[in-house]
Length: 455
Image (cartoon, rainbow, N blue to C red):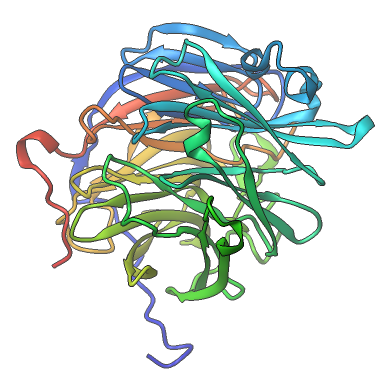
């Protein structure tokens, strides 16, 4: 296809299927006292762990609180350095992941001591599958503050990408094998120029990628008809053979980033206030979820774009051909002119795709919504009718920083149930946010087995 002639997929209309039936739907961490909360959660064999910029909590799958909320620094009590002692203002951007291969919890957060120019990423790896138990703890050092770190689980390493300085990002691999047993662990890093922070392919399920397959880093491309990617191969026995290859360009359907013609950081309207929210349209959204189906591999990712006079979620399912990504399907979810952004997507073992996001407009307060599609539905469409997880009762009046991410996670017990975590305002204000955690299924994985395919 000649350059500049890429076909534009149709905007998704309202889904033909019924609304999604929610399972549990409960309050998570709330009112940390600042913005943004950056809520994200992951689910393990028996528990769910949620973390925000301010606190961490452990829940049962019925929503009962088992631990917390407590400050994330509690994990590093007695560890010393900024991981234990940094002020609240010098901590941030935490993430939690369930390592489905090792059946462990992994939590990371940056910490900084400005007086000594000490910059760390603090990482805690649970010793068992019990999130309330003990953790092995690590502090990886950097010359510059590793801001907005995005963390991913892969068999040969835990991968992290963060800002470095200026238009540079730091891409690092941490020695996962040694961290899982509490041994001293190295990191291998590259500093690479990029306009925004890439995110690494993040494993779901218990089927690992083919042995030796590099971790794939994805980013928005230099032009609005492409994505950009790198292939990070780590070698712990001979670090001279570690490579970060790229950037390469992947052609996609043309798009316009959300509010690119005005100000993407003052973009999303809310009811009852002139304060607008940051669309984060300059970055791919967490997670870049990976799954190996045996006969093929798939990854899903999303970002915010202009659509129908508002903002929609551009989502992609990518495949791998000889280790390089190809577009399997893509579309912009925008069934009407409201604003949808801050998305997170994942696939279950069937190949069903779930997409969660924030929604707001000049007539509505920010709310939490989801949609999805089944594996064998017509390609390029979210087929489930948009479903509201929770309706916000207020708007954020004093800050444009709604958040850096939300999270869609997969329950490892059935590899079928989705768990989505996002934020809302119970009343107008700033720093008085709540978070909400909800589970749902799109199909019965046990009854139907794996259905994923592309006819």
